[in-house]
Image 1 (tube, rainbow, N blue to C red):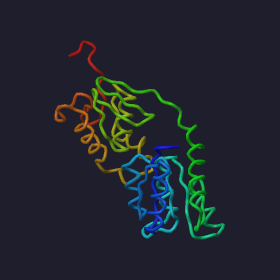
Image 2: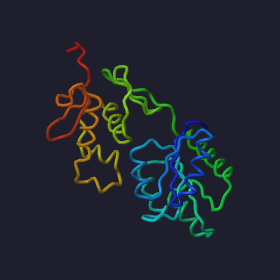
Image 3: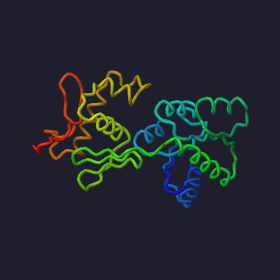
Image 4: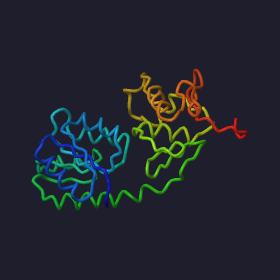
Length: 234
């Protein structure tokens, strides 16, 4: 159970520091946040394996954060609270939390629950086939992308969009279809050009000349396509 990346969310800086220090000593990679909105932003940008989430946060409560995460991911969430009420526990679990821990708690108990959650969820992520198109190799299991021999760093959504395009290489994907696949509950993006922005970022990282893309091509008025390599090498 090493090298998993955890997101700790609590507005108590002392608790964050203590948990972060202990978890890093046990081999975890740890990111911290003291607010719900910041936590969701970090979740969107980083590769997170498990979230430890406090119920009481200054801007939005843990229930709201948990529900927002659940619209996009099934990663384990352990809810923390200073309340010992049955209602809070039920709300936490019904919002999508996998486990529940009442403050104050022993660190060893939290670590045991983290390990248990990770063990339970790993079987739900079977090994997937590595995608190879042209000079790009995408590994869904390690979420890594290599162009020629160079590994590049992508955000969560950039990776998801690239994987969707490579899985459907040679097919034109409409913008709205991509949005529904990757943001099924996000009305925020309904009228935005978020797909176009992500595509621009992908091209900047993948293409030798982003202004004349070789891999991710635009189909005017429709959407995007991952272009299959020319069998004649042209």
